Image (tube, rainbow, N blue to C red; front, top):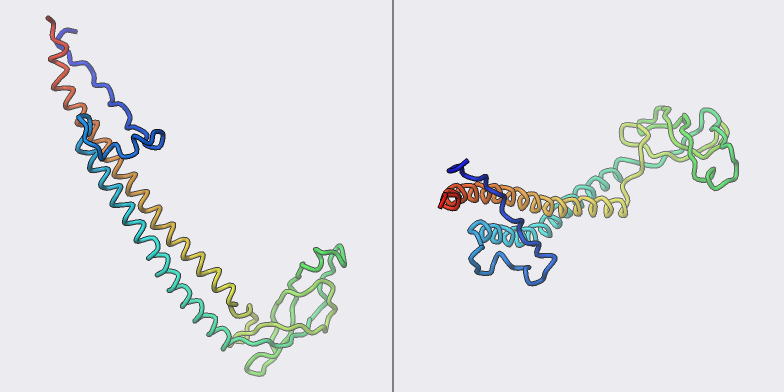
Length: 212
């Protein structure tokens, strides 16, 4: 219909800098097609890169140091409040289907044992023992200050492993946050570009579509 404004077509996609080294810094170069939002997006990307490069190692060190001190304090407390005590099996431990096999050497079965608590009273609890141990066999168990069977204190390797795990999570958290912010700002600016394109087309299209 004469005089009707044609629908605006979407703008061409942004160049892919990774495909052509000459386009790597295209948002920073002056050219007639560069939009204000392109320059804003370039500054935001640069700011996020610098922020992540500085914040990620700092977060990794801060979290790692905090976690290391926490687990070291926990290990010291466990070493003071836990001790190895002899315990006697109340009944026979189950036998492994393949006695003498490598699997049998690694397998442990939970069995009820009897032991003396820190307060001198006789207690019972459950611990993992080798297959086939007969009743009245003696094993060593870790007992805490309340007289409950528990695990051994944290070792230096366990502290190191947990510290590294939390430090890596902190590093990745900062990186993923930076990527998320970059993605959200890119989406907002893209929508702004589309709105500007529609407005410019609505102003220009009637002049192109006028009948001569």
